[in-house]
Image (tube, rainbow, N blue to C red; front, side):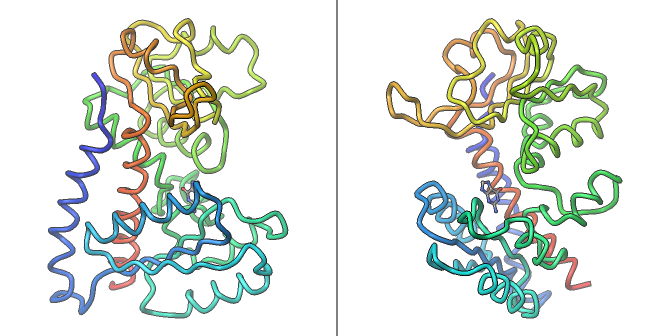
Length: 282
Ligand code: GUN
């Protein structure tokens, strides 16, 4: 089975849109997401455009603030402080990566925890690891939703996550653990990686290398979640971290690239924006 993140996210966005319709009457306005884009990295521009499009579909107000690559760290921190103080702004997202002269952790820490729709603020990260209420990072949240929508049993299963980033690998490992999987965190330095991944009943790949996972690394019947967004060096087309054509026949469930995890990430960003909005209404 191929899980279409595109279809699942379309369903979930339609449900959110229905709920958001009632917000002006209930709360006086709709949620407002502010996205800050620094520079013109083509991938970032495309992600930010996708976020604006999804906001429009759900009925969320979206403001995209563009700043040049040359913006100073102090100026960016000043902008964030203004947005934090503005009660009309419910969610603040700074598109990553930032130019080298800007300290990303400083920027993430500057965002009000209550408006941190990415779930990247250290207090949200700490809350996740302590099983406290928090804003969950969008990609990991979307992955769990996809597994559940596909009817994948997670409890007690051997899950292997390749990649240990703050954005995906670490938090998705924690969420799988919270779903009672037995989680192995593998990475670029793991010895005998193929042996480790062949033991996976659920394999999540977020390593950022085109077609890194080959058929010999996957057991028959495995559930394979591909978080990669890469250019295939041969064809120039978008491809994942998984050799989809070779693995799809072996996997019981697999996500495509594009149209898999990506749309679910944006969908969860919409959900997080609504959650931040509703929490601030209370
Ligand atoms: N760059 C790549 N993925 C993400 C994400 O989930 N959030 C932000 N802010 N930047 C990113």
